[in-house]
Length: 64
Image (cartoon, rainbow, N blue to C red; front, top):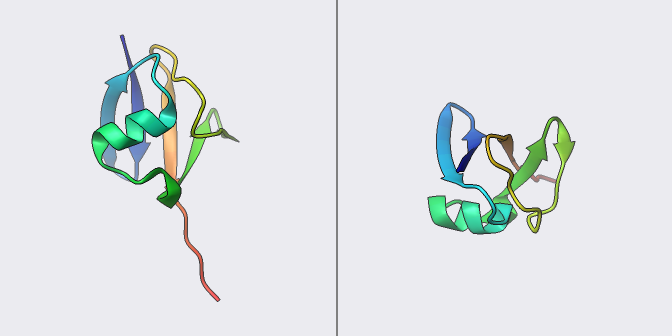
């Protein structure tokens, strides 16, 4: 039972049932550095991942 996270051209398989934050910790991406989307909708790092779903990550960029 896995879900997939995609950041740019990198794909990661992560366990379903854990939170997005836990999945990001597992693959070594600080959750504060990305926007987490499910079907084009921004989700919280506390959302549980569902089996077979695709989560797209977008690097958060700030400037001034």
